[in-house]
Length: 234
Image (cartoon, helix red, strand yellow):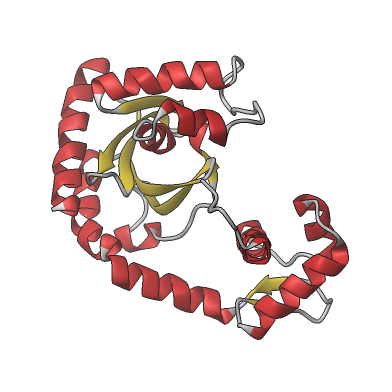
C-alpha cells in the first residue's frame, strides 16, 4: 500500500533501476522509457542520477548497464540478512536426492532465485545464475503467494494477466487456497515436478526440489524440504 504522500521520483527511480538490473544487458533511454511508460527526458534524468550514485553506468554506445554500487548493495544485503550463510549447508545436503535444488524470494509478480542448481553442478555454482521467473508458474512463487491474503493477490494481478492460468486470478486463487491447506506447493516444471515449502515465519523465502519421482516419494521430499527449511530459519 502506498503511503499518503508517496515520493513519485523515488518510485520512478527504483523502477528504472529494477528495469536495468533485470534485463541483464545494457538498455537505451528510449527503450526503457517505452517499457516504463515515461517520457524519455525523465528517464534520462533518472539514469543520470543513478549513474552519479554508481547504481548504473553509461556504456560507449550510450546505453546504460548495472553499476558497481548494485553489486556492493547485493553483497551487503546478503551479509546483513545472513540468509545465504544459513542456507548453504541445508541446500547442499538436499542435493543428495539427485534433483534440482532452489531457493527464491517473491518480488512483485516474480520469483528471484537466490540459488538454483541441478545435480550436475557444484553447490557454489547455484548462486545467482537464474533470471526472474513468473511467480504464478513457480512452486516457490505459489507457496510464497499463499502466505499473502487474497486481497493482496488480487491487487498484484489487477491487470488480469496470470501466467499459467487461463482463468486468470480466479484460477490462481483456487490453487493458492489448496496450497494453504496442504502446506506445500506442487507445480509441473521442465525438470518434471517442482515441490516447494516456505522458510521462516513470516516467510522470507522458499526452497524447492524439482525432478522426476514417483508419487509415493513425494511425502519424503516434503519432509526433507521442511527439515532444511527449519534449519535455515532456525
